View 1 (cartoon, rainbow, N blue to C red):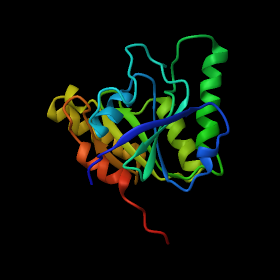
View 2 (view 1 turned 135 degrees about the vertical axis):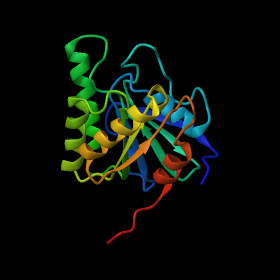
View 3 (view 1 turned 30 degrees about the horizontal axis):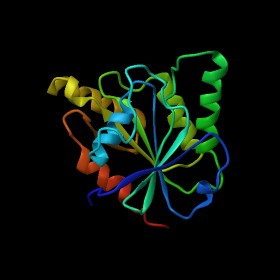
View 4 (view 1 turned 90 degrees about the vertical axis):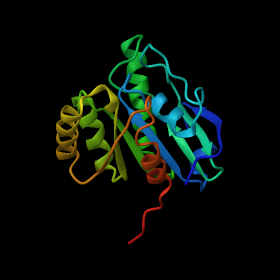
Length: 194
């Protein structure tokens, strides 16, 4: 299913009524500079929905975008690096953890974005462990696949898949629009309840 509408609703730094709505939420998380904003913008076919910056750590709120008037795409701050004091960095980490662990947030899935060339970093592994601990449904996106030669890409994807085990892995390139359809289908697919 194609994404036909996307609008910014609000940015959160704490409790808000939007968290308690029945509209499902799909959260996007990744380390700073992994291309999270570019992935989001490529999905909605807009250059400026999520603001990207050459300086890592620009996103400082939990940003809610209403997609197809049916679910929220939630853009979380990047982890692993942010300009500013340790206090500001710690505040961003606390904000990420607060949202992902929020008992009332209707989080349908979490899209964890990693760098296809770099593979999982320690920060990525820590985030994956946190998401698993809280029993979140996880989709892993290996972004920047266009930066690798085919053979290197194959090895990198195999290494990532072995680390994330049974979680779905989607090879992606925001720049070349590779994987857009797969990810669009995945974030809109409703899981069967047991």
